[in-house]
Image (cartoon, rainbow, N blue to C red):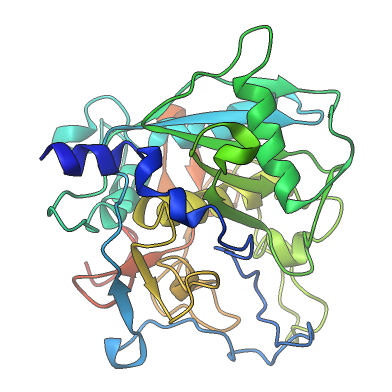
Length: 350
């Protein structure tokens, strides 16, 4: 038991051999899929599976999952209006609202907490499940974008280091913490829009001083909403007069970010050290539990079709889960290891 607890707390000794791993671990391959040359593949050519596990070789590689209660520490990099912060905070609070241990905390079905229950199905070698408790922790703001408006992948780790070593109000070095770096629209991150909308990994002690799970997600509103905020923006090559869905919180960039944040947190919880749950032979390029369900938000989803969504009677916006404070969100489904296909709480066959 002591050994298992040490793994859950990300003891430095259990990952020291991983610090030389490449920075290529990408947990989000944006819709639409792209081939090896960077060109867009045909509609329906992505790995969006809603069917048999015969096509999906998701495997457990003996590493830890986030089984201890999870605390998410947002790091706001760049200029963030208060309302945009409120929307993202509301989503994070919706993952396990008060009272959700015995239900959904009074939130109407389908709820964000019910969506997280699929993520909770993943276990480690001690049979410990991903935690059902996800708290919003302390936050750090870097409105001046102190490391500049252009960041490499490794720079994201430096942003985390700045947050935990700040002279004033540093973020805690949290044994059960997840550090969520959120960049505003004017910030350019390496490969943003072209290859990624977000990614997760763990910090290197040589850079940060600690091994900490973290994720980065960018606001694509000014650059590539048709890629990273789909389906609130539609690529021009999608025919048939397809119209974009109305965002449930009235902000294409932030509503798109919420789905990417959900994607990254699900994969970070089930594969925090790149040695737990993923398909494929290369842990540097894993196909993880949300990658398997890219673009699927409801029953029948796949290819260029989101699946069956719900519609807000007042605003006409599309959503598939309810959150705290009457908020609504649209988040992609994740792979269900029991059912062996993509699932979510708004599924019509549940």
